[in-house]
Length: 262
Length: 220
Image (cartoon, rainbow over all chains, first blue to last red; front, side, top):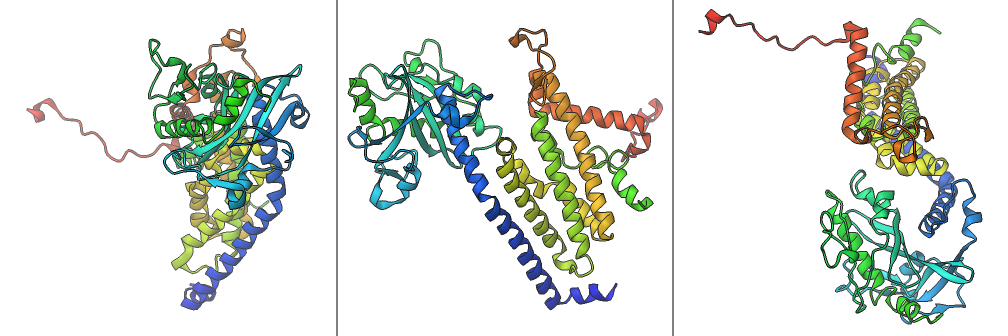
């Protein structure tokens, strides 16, 4: 055994090596994280925009995301009244940031918070797509807890505030290969044309276990589940129930349905 | 290049391949090979980690206390993997989403720890670095073969470019959906191992036991 090796095997040697290795590795990791942060944030912003375009049906890989994004009109709404707020700049407003600030957010009552939203900002963002002046799609940011993680996504509705066009999640930590179906194209297909509310205005939308039977009277409110990902599916049902409900976008959607331009 | 260096670099590609001979690193070979592009990033990531982890462990091999040997190796590997993961998120965002946890799982990839423990802790820095690259290339070769097969037969494309137009797109190719599911990676790797061992019979393992031939009279 070489001298160096014998010296390394003492308690002092062991501690010294452990300390030096830990310091070297942690500074490597920390500097990589700090230096790459700006690029990662820029990527994340771009990815959110890409997902908005995706549910808006505008995504075109051959064109720049920022250029396509100009067609999207972001508006700030007040959750309580459901009306638009004009004196807050939607570009500068971050609902996730605002939700952390007790001044600018409210606690979701625990009896309706099955999606574990926790705190919700008092103001929210909606994205509108217009065609010749008329709103053709309403895009709502939604979030909630699945099996392992909070999932963040976008729900696109027809201007009737009821018929679903699309639902996708852009950030989540669900099981790869199972729960991550919430960001896959064939999952999004399942939502097309489903209705969130019944004719009496009751919130009905949910994911069922297995397939929705053809003769099911509530078929238009029910979406096929994915076997092996029941809890992720329940999370999606819960978060839609919350965000489309009275504590979420409910008041806003009622105004939309009445045709008030808020 | 000395013959030892050449051996360290070339041998793991076919003769001492980590996947086909040692059957290591199968987990990621299964998970990321549905299409070629994420597999290529995975290959780059693993080769980078294997090479630099080997070099780092080899550098400190004389002062590395044997009692904390493995944990130090894991710390080095884990740090390198985090750097790779962060870089992918910064420079190849879409692919990093697709690879999700599997880049992080390089930490537990048996190939990397296997090489630092069995090779780098006993050999000089240069040749250890080359050994890491060689093993990375050996892994990459198999991953690329599996991913190309799966993407081509499962979707009719390579790197997203259409090679065979599928029936759904109005062509004549009927894609094999099984190829997009994890079990197909087992089949493809199995076929590759079979092919390699037919070509190089010395890689065939000795059977652990032999079925004893029983004579009819004995059985009665």
